[in-house]
Amino acid sequence: MVDFIGIERVRELVGALSPQRFIAELAGEIAADFRRWEQFDKSARHAVHSPVGVIELMPTSDGRLYSFKYVNGHPKNTSEGLLTVTAFGVLSDVNSGYPLLLSELTLTTALRTAATSALAARHMARADSRVMALIGNGAQSEFQSIAFHHMLGIRELRLYDTDPGATAKLVDNLAQLRLAGLKVVACRSTAHAVEGADIITTVTADKRNATILTPDMVAAGAHINAVGGDCPGKTELHADILAGRDTRVVVEFEPQSRIEGEIQQMPADFAVTELTQVLTGRAPGRATAHEVTIFDSVGFALEDFSSLRYLQRIHQAERGLRRTVDLVPDLEDPKNLFGLLTRDSRSGDKTATRPPARVSA
Image 1 (cartoon, helix red, strand yellow):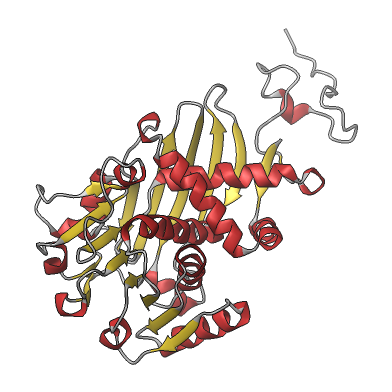
Image 2 (spheres, one colour):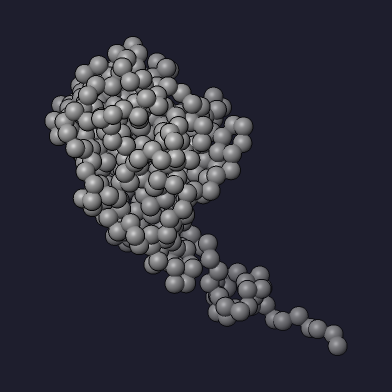
């Protein structure tokens, strides 16, 4: 039997810990794995594009465990009452090839994206950052808000979305969370939202080369958490922001970010730093208080590997609530797969079979 974690189980696990604690603990798992970067098999995700969206597979392994995530991105879906992004994942044992865990990753991807964003910002944003502009108030926005409030001490959120309903939804959800000391301001434009912001998070869904931020909107010393640009042909930042003289750009996995991130706009020799270098101290996340820092985040398979392993551990810790699924056959004779079809399901005995058929000479 394979451990199974569905939507309801993730709700239970997050509820038992609180979203804040879940995100912070997951950030710790992700940081630990990025610090052992060299142990992982790394590749850009495999993407199949269509005119309306993308379906991707994201694999990685540390030689002991293997994981992959299936994820889609279809911006049109919300007009049809569907989610823009859905995902599930598998964690497997490299030694046997057997799957150990099958898990939902739709909720978990939002949690791990927020955890990674806040993790990077702790090393890149100014330590006195207290105001964040959040541009794009859709499905990711609550998770980003929780992460930055809890992990970085953000005290004011300035919100803007082209859809006023999305902003109203976010304001309502944040009010229900009652995050202590957090002021929430709905703004009339992106330019209004970024006024006085120490951190700017862009997390829009439209899959096109957009210009959400222009250089005049970005103050010296700001940190930009660019989350929305996550496929070829989709960007949020004006290229001149990236090319600024006093700008530092950090990515997760450079070969993937060259294809999908904000840096797809830039020349092949445009210099970037990988997050592992920052987390291991081999490169600074910020050199001066006046530097503009950019985390060009597209999401990387290692983050899902960390998430699946973390989910498995906290899932298994509660033995009474553990759930499994019969995804892999359990055979008395591993060479007799066909015997699975002749097993006597009424007996409940995995070794019981119907009498063999008489074969004519």
